[in-house]
Each structure stands twice: as C-alpha cells, then as structure tokens.
Amino acid sequence: MSSIEDRLDNLRAICQVDPGERGLAMPPERNAFTERAGDLSLAAHGLCAPDQDGHKTRVGILTGFHVPVDEYFGAFETDGPPGAVFLARTLLRLGMEPVLFGEPALLVALEAGLIEAGLGGRVRLIEYPRDAYESGAYVRRFHVAAGRLTHLVSIERPGPSHSLATLRARSDYVPDWDLDFKKVAPPPTRDRYLTMSGLDVTHQHSPAHWLFEQPSPHGPWQTIGVGDGGNEIGMGALPWDLINATIPEGGRIHCRVPTDSVIVAGVSNWGAYALSGALLAIHELDHCGLFDANKELEILKVMVEQGGLIDGRTKEQACTVDGLPWDTHAEVLSRMSSAIG
Image (cartoon, rainbow, N blue to C red; front, side, top):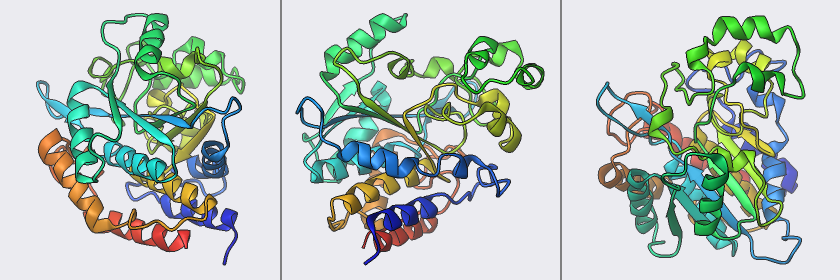
C-alpha cells in the first residue's frame, strides 16, 4: 500500500485540475496550484493533531458566496456549502465536532443538506453576528455564540480585496507592485468583496473575514482556507503578483486575507473532498460511503431545492457546480475514493 503522504499527494493532484480555465495551473513552472502544494498535508495533519490544552477538536466551518443574478436578485452558489456538509460528515466520523456558520438564507440550505446526510440535529448551525459594525464587537459576538473552537475552515467564502496600504503591509511586498496595482485596481474596487468578474458583493455578506484577522480570545487556533479563484479567504497566502499575472482580474479581486494553510482546487468543493479524504487517510479509515457520488447528488439536490442555491457560473437553480455537469464531480469523487485506499 502507498504511504499516507503518497495518498495525500494523489488527492491533491485530483483536486488541482482547472476545468474552468481560470489560470490556476499556468504557467506550469509556478502557479496557484504549485505555490502552496504542501498545504493540503499541512491542513490535514493540523486537524489531526491533539489540542495542546486537551480540549476536543471543534472545527468552525465558514462558507457561502452570494452571487448576483441581476440588479434585484442573487443567491448563494452551489460551490462551498456541499463541501462544508461533506467535511462536517467526515469530522463527525473522526470524533471531532463541526460547527457550521452562515447567513440566514444559507443556513436553510446547510440544514437541508445535513438532514439529507442523516445528520439532522447533530451539527450546530450558527448565524454570523448581526449589527456588529466593527471588528472587535463582531469577533466577540462570534465567540460568545460559538464557544471555544480549535480550528477555523473557510470553504469558498469571499474576503476583501487589497487596498494600497494592505498591499504594502505584506511581508513579500515589492515596491514595483504599486504601479501595477494602481492600474488594475481603481480605488472603488479596493477593500471590497468581489466576484471573479469584479462585481462588488460586499454588502451581501457578513464580514466574517474579521475572524481571520484577529486572534481568538480562547487561545491559538489553526486556520484553513479553500478556494478556486483568488478572491476567497485564504488566498491572501499566495503572492499578489502571482494572482495578478495568472488569473483574469486577479490583481483586482485577490483576497488579502491569508490562512495558516490554503488549499487551492479547481472547484472549492473538490478541495473540501480532498481535505476530508486526507483526514481519513491519516487515520487509516475506510471512507464508508462518504465518496458516494449518488448520495452527494441527492444532498446537492435538496440544498438547491430547499435552500435556493444556484450555480455560480450559469446563475441557474440547478444541480450543477461552476457550470460543470454532475458527471465531472462524480468522477472526482470516484478517483478520490480510490486514492484513499
């Protein structure tokens, strides 16, 4: 049997395919996939490590990317929430405690998915804090509601783009970036939640990125980001010049918020699948049907029908993710199932 690290590397390779041709895999010598290639292993081993103070592993899972359909209507997309439910199922199997967070409309979809997965009532669902207009109050309210968390995982959750000040504050900042940044990111697009096409969706989201920019009052915790476009929480761990050079609109939309480890995948749900598979591989556990594509399709179906999720690319309320037919996702699940062994 292959070693655990070989299996983790296989899982990473399966999820790091760019079906949407977003520039994640180009150029071959240095790209968003290769820049932090070891982070899937880092994230998985970090989740498996015992808490230093002996507390049970409690993992906060944040998700939800709200995309506009027209000037009057929008909805949360199908990439992210199914991956959050999938990771929650895995964590429960490993004896860990997942806690899911979202805006009210998103919580409806997450609850529907959990019920379809047979986990109704077994996973806490918590709404992001309301009416907290500065970061300190927001973080305090979050921790009062959530209690002590040992890890925070963001799956396809947008975060703010750079301002000139935050760009210059990066440890890898190069003065030559200034001119390029001013060209690609006009002032109205700075410090905003942006879609891949540069649309401003800041006000459709709770400012959960503050949780990653301030320390936990309960002591150190590990943070993990999963994304597929450069504009998600965690992608700030990648250099700005790399995202600017490889992803369309990358320098404008690049999320400034880093995480301890970042899993870059062709589809964010795939990154959640790969992280789940890595946890099972480390624990030498069989997946016990977790990678059943038919079951995942049923979970997605109820999340779409009852929670109003839409495909982020087609903008249709359908059982597709990022414009890809379900067969594509089913193949990824099948290959990961084999890779776990």
